[in-house]
Each structure stands twice: as structure tokens, then as C-alpha cells.
Amino acid sequence: MPYPLFHLASCFPKLKPSFGNSPSLVTCYLRSRTVKIDVYDWDRDGSHDFIGEFATSYRELSRAQNQFTVYEVSNPRKKCKKKKYTNSGTVTLLSFTVQSEFTFVDYIRGGTQLNFTVAIDFTASNGNPSQPTSLHYMSPYQLSSYAMALKAVGEIIQDYDSDKLFPAYGFGAKVPPDGKVSHQFPLNNNLDNPNCEGIEGVLESYFQSLRTVQLYGPTNFAPVINLVACLAAQVTDGSQYYVLLIITDGVISDMLQTKEAIVSASSLPMSVIIVGVGPAEFGAMEELDGDEVRVSSRGRYAERDIVQFVPFRDYVDHSGNHILSMARLAKDVLAEIPEQLLSYMKTRDIKPLSARPQ
Image 1 (cartoon, rainbow, N blue to C red):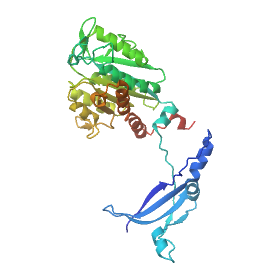
Image 2: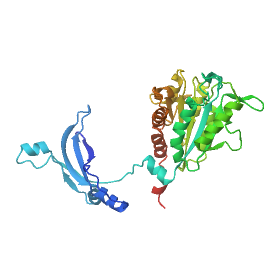
Image 3: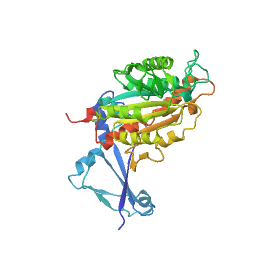
Image 4: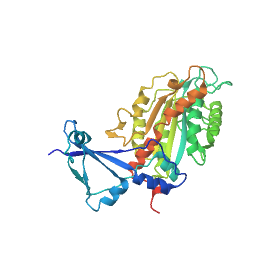
């Protein structure tokens, strides 16, 4: 016997009622709204046959579950054609449960804090910062691609970070005083406290680092990803979520280690944003993005997609409107963060703090 297939569709009114600031009125309205339920005759090949429909409401369903209420299923077409038509069958309500679908805003309002960390590529392939051809060139007239990407993303995400203190690192440079290559040196030169005050503080430290370090190489992502992952692993109750922004000019040197780092971090409250600047090919970055094929390492796949990659050149406004370029970049760079945060919360069954039983 074929199985009945149910399709629920709320009947939205054309005009939204105004309730002021009364949550109780909103709840009352939602519970009394009409819910239309379509019933189909299930077919294996997907060509399900429409049986009929009936209407009810949240309030009615919640009351009816203890009474084994029977609903008559009516097919409007048959009802119009046949005078003696009564119904196309019945549906008996045996049980009724409610599952809450929380949004990104619910978690932010509930107290979840976003922690924003920056990592900037200081490898020699970016070119000498004192030359106009360098991607790090500090022109007195306009921001470099690195600075624009940092400012565009940071100025939006800082609104979700309560203390406005951002750890900021560089990688791939020889740093003073010993000139050793580092892949996670603090831009403010303070190993004990790498935090910068606001995005302007990050930019200031970035410009200062350009004057003091020697661009070198290679381009290693894994150290800074693992650094942030260690922080994220300390708070997994949903009160904190970590976002790492990596700005780079191209070919990654530690692909295997980076994949391993991403797979490990995918079980943590963490996302990685990669912005590619310059004309290089970014095939490896697309692979890390994992939209088409989930990132894997040593036969183990990432638990969820935590990486978002965007090439900066795709967002440059050719008329020279840098504000528009930054707005376009920020929109797409941050597009996946809400869903990535929600995916972590759902897999851990973590509710917003405000929705938890007191």
C-alpha cells in the first residue's frame, strides 16, 4: 500500500500585523495562524499523486493530540466535479511535537560572542612593500588590497565582537630581533598580548610590521589555524565562536598540514575566511573551501564546511569606487558565517543562551 506524503504550508497574510513590543501577542498570533496540510500518495519514482488537503492551526494541533482527532482530507477539484463528494479519506492525529529552528540572530542576541582573529601573508611573493607593484604597497592615496580586505570584513564583524579586541598575526616573514622565519608572529610585536584595539588598531599594527619585518616565506596556513583552533577548543558550549580571517596572495606551501588542521577544526566552534589578493591562481584555496567536495585528510573528512574563500579581484570596482569594492567583498566573505555557526550549534544540540531552561 502506498504511503501518504504530507506537505505543510503556512498561509501567510498579505499584510503583516503590528504588535508593538508584545511577545505574548506575537506568540498568540502565530499559534492561531492557519496551517494547510497537503496529502499525497507516495510513489517511488517521485511522481506523487495529490490526494487532498485539510486546514488546522498550531493551537488546534497541540490540543488535538490527546484526543486522536480525525481530519477529513478534501480534494477541491473532485469537490467541484462531484456533487455527492464528501472526502478523499481521513488523517488521524496520533502525536504532535514542536522543534525550534533558531537563527544566527537568536544566538547573537542570546549572548554568543564572535571572536575575530586576523592572519596576514608576509611572504616575499607579495613584492617589496616600498614599491608600487607590491600588494602591500602603502600608497598615500589609497589602501592596498590587503588593507581594503581587512577593513571591509573587519568593520562589519567587529560589531558582533563585544570587546573589540582582535588578535592579529603575520606569517611567512623574518622577524626581529633574530631574523627567524615565523608563521604566527603578533603584528603588535607583543607575544603575551597580540590583541589590537578595533580594526583601526589592526591596520596600524599591520603597517608597523611592514616597516620592521623582512618578507620571506614559505606560505604556511596550518600554524595560525591550529593556534585559533586551540582557543576554540577551550570553549565549546556555544558561548563563543571563533572566526579566522586569512589574507594571502597565492600558492600555499603546507597543503597537507592545512587540510589536517581544517579537518580537526571542523568539530570546533570555528570558521576560516580566506581572501586571496593579487593575480595568482587560487585552485588550492577553492579546494580548501569545500563547497563541492568536503575537505579530507588521511581518510578523514571534515565534520562540516568551515572555510569560505573569495578572490579579492572579483570584487574590485573598475570605476575606482573602493567603497563599493569593499561592500561587495564583505557581503560575500561573511555570507557563510551564520550558516557555519548554526551548523555547529545544531550538531551539538546547543540552544541560544536565552532559550535554555533557567
